[in-house]
Length: 292
Image (cartoon, rainbow, N blue to C red; front, side, top):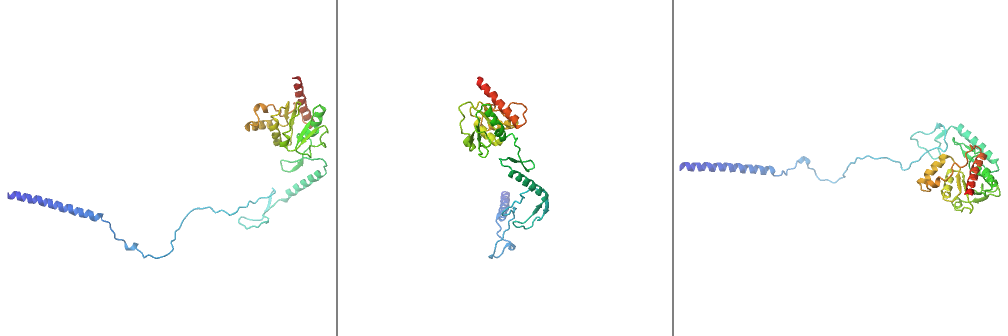
């Protein structure tokens, strides 16, 4: 009996000791989890009124309010440079001097040309060479002079009724064309609306440039010409054909009806020979039309 009570007391002690340990552990955990509200005094300061400064670092690009491109109106060799990088300059200040020998030579050439032009009473053509110097264009040029001086008079002698379309009244007049030539003068957009004559018509496009050639051809290619020719090289015809097809101005079949270069291949060189070759092809097409 005594032993039994002793055993029970030992058991309770063990439970008591275990309970103290558990309680002590709970108190330790609770103490560790409790927040520490103590603030380090070195981090404290008195509240005062003042300016708040903040620095911002960024990259950027500095650009002027206005830019001025300085370039010479004339080309040449620089002889003197009268300003350096970073110098302040004023409007009208000379910055660079060019070699005057070349300029004097060009002025002398231009003066001689103008004297030559002043001595000519009839209209005169001039152009720009590859070195940018100006010079008169000879009258055997295969352009408008071809038609004025050779094709139109010769076509009259070959029983063609001739009508000339031109936008320059100073050239399209009977000072340059025979009286029997009919002249249509005005803007191209008006001229190209003029209807064809009732009799079979033959057309020849020979203007003062590729741009005008293309403008006339873009309208005349749709008209019922018996024959339509255009002066120019095969390269010109190829380039113009590609443009017309790309822009849907004409079909391939329509463009292939155009004779360019125009004229029978007789190895013509001079203006008169070219005129003969052109009218020989006109005569051939007229004969074919009569035999139909």
